[in-house]
Image (cartoon, rainbow, N blue to C red; front, side):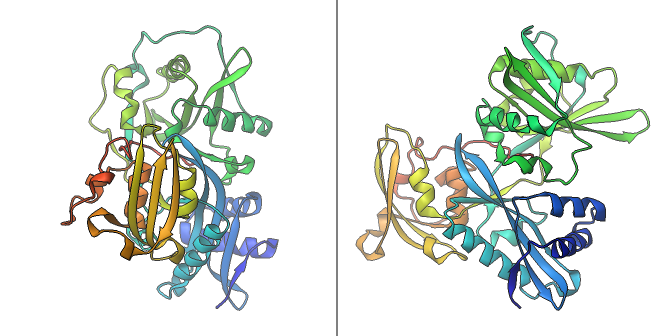
Length: 394
């Protein structure tokens, strides 16, 4: 069965029908999604006139260590239940990932229901998000007040580019996934979202996006989808805005990195705070391009060697030499026989991804290995751990 690109309306409607079957969202919502999002590179496998499997890539940008990278976001991976366990998704994913590799995307990301399945394609968990649940009244009272900061609700799509501008300049960069204009429509329907922008001297400096969820009679929740702020003063203004809902919201729920130190802004917090069970997954898509773009501490002056295993992209597999100096990295593939074994670090693409995204240090990722880790890889400033929470709302 051949893989075809899906662009015509008739086949997009078939994709919506298949997505309704696989993801259980309303059919009308799926139609609006597939007909409305322009950034999709949607691929499908047909049996006769019936679409039986599909997968898509969406153009994003993603912050890795506070640095913006072009990202191929994977979405709409679906198979008709009748045709599962035939290797159709594997065929689609392998082609899609390899094509994005050739197009020069350094990184790829996805948000799966089942993590173990996507590890086979080189993806690995990359974030440590903490879900907070607290009452608006539990936000502290003595937050800094800046009367020059104004708040307004965004209802016009012409203001959406301002949100991405804020995200790119935000102090809390590590929570950002930034998409193009239509990425704000990724869920197919924004009617349930509220978006407020914070401005100072007519300059956009922060925003908050949320939706309301009625749990039961007299129990209303505000679910914070994302927020960004240029400085601490703006963060205080956003928290003061949240506190305004103490008369009509039972709880606020939000997911952020634990190093965000939300607890310092709360009078008390409940035992329901916990790590989120549905973190994003990331994989390095093009090793050479990624390391050429990655910025390092200018104090570093190192030569490193690594042997990489990649089950999908053969061009990534093999032995690489990395020369780091003046904040940049020169990288080239070399013959393994030229490197002493004690200087060579052996990694899967999954492990390498976790190390460079800051999920864990080299020691933590490889602590179960019996072999010694080359001393050159252990230096703390090389790849320090960094807590992250990846938000998809861009």
